[in-house]
Image (cartoon, rainbow, N blue to C red):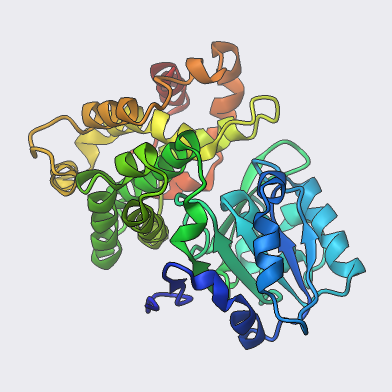
Length: 376
């Protein structure tokens, strides 16, 4: 099956086997494959290497950090240039795919990565990049179909790069690649996808098709019990298929924007000492922001509850907290190592995050502080 949406991802069990064919279609003969140490250590990179035809000459960058950094982009870019590569593959979770997007950008753009962030007016500066393919091994970020890349810059800020030119030229969505993902990462990635769907629906931008896609993602994750089942049994291929589809749908949905959950998680995720998982942060923060937004989103919360298979009169924030408990997510930010002393810096970062453009209710500095306290 091939989805007719944006970059038409190749979505089916076993679709990784098409990698040589897809690379050739993009004119890539010498790909730089950006991945992380964890996947390299369990032999996942060998899986790709063994599927590449003899005329293809890959170079591997296996040091993608949990939250990709400008430093890692520069290191991977050096490997790209040294080995005369002609395209990029992001292979892994959102971090590896985001890193791959940034390398594809910098391979034919001047200056530094930070110059192309939304905060620095980068949207209009980004032109066509070198060819880039995304291959997710988790079900959460949807980076394989999105126009964004999130990078921690050398100055410590976690900033967004965004452009249609950053959408991968092709994507391989093979649910079988997620079978080995442990329950805690399955849960965190799944809550990333759910947060994308819910924040996109709450966004005030009027885009009914994107909203419908988000509602379908919510149904798959919660009502159909796909995330719970994937956490209980990582070998459940139906659950894995549904979660990868919901992840892709989440990114399709947030074409209408995100909101304060992502502003807050980006702020915390910039902390290089904590090194917290982005999706887990989203899941923990989500109930607090739902409560903050509830009187500013019209009839959207009952519709979300209906998609979850819950009563429209239920409290959505409470239902998300129950769901987090069911999949063993932390109960608050304090449990994850966030302290009250960090809040002033987190507020400062959150205020400038581009996700605020589509939040249904923009917090004041004092309200940002209260949101972090409430999420503790």
